[in-house]
Amino acid sequence: MNRHARSRTTVYVAGALALLAAATGCTGGGDSGAASAALVPASGSPASGSPASGSPATAAPSPSRSAGPSPTASPSGGPAAGDAAAWAKWHLTPLPPAPPAPADKPVKLARTGPVPVFSEVKTSDKVVFVTIDDGAEKDPKFVEMLTDLKVPVSMFLTRDIVKDDYGYFKRLQALGNHIHNHTVDHAQMSKVPPEKQKSEICDAQAALTQQYVTPPLLFRPPYGDGANTPALNTAVQQCGPRAVVLWRESMQIHDMQYQAADKKLRAGDIVLAHFRGPKDLKGETMTQMFGELLARIQEQGFAVARLEDYIEAPAA
Ligand SMILES: [Zn+2]
Image 1 (spheres, rainbow, N blue to C red):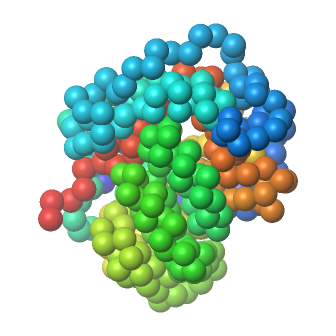
Image 2: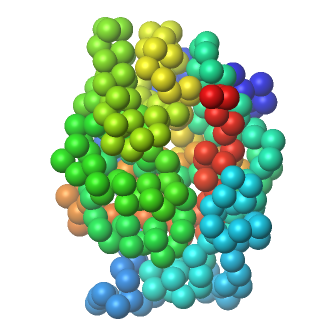
């Protein structure tokens, strides 16, 4: 496991607080209610052309590319940031570019044995990591948005929720984003027997590997449920993923739900969002929700880095 894990990382500890917070994941979710802003392409639509709610009206950071050695994601460089015009198209203030990927990965995964459970990555880089779950909403505009903004995301996909359109996620994968395992049918793992936990993970692993070629390295249990149980850890080990990944913040519609009492992002936090559309977002679209998420991150001065750039996979 990650020998650098911070004390507040949840490792093999069935913390009631963590479970309580985890239980808010993957549900319809309330919303803490910041005013909505129109986060649609400028070419596309009505509404106000104002920036995201709450965004300071200060000058945008310079439209520089990534500070990394390459403008594209590479093993040694951080993801490139989209240019200023791209951010303006979505009525967003650019995020700072992510720093180059660390050479010495803060998370080192072993090939065998118990898998670590973590909800943040130890780093002093002012970055957070965005993860998106399930796969229900397959909005083409979101592919356009990520293509424009070059914000890295990690996807935790549920087989039966994505199987009607595996191709949608291939388009997101083609942008450099990784796909991970989020069960066959979104079962609540602690409520099913060990053999069912195993099939939920192994069958999803097989289908996702067949579709997306690279076997998922990470697993996230629906609702975060059962993450710290021996049964789940054993099932994950049997199926191939080498870590269980939870989260510190959960995006709702306009704002994040924080586990930290001060409601502030911290370096290395993993943020949960979902592929959701208007039906689950009180009429908001996936791109509006995601724009609000980026605005909340930008307001706090963080870049979005690629989670997999901070993880050393086991040697093949
Ligand atoms: Zn889920």
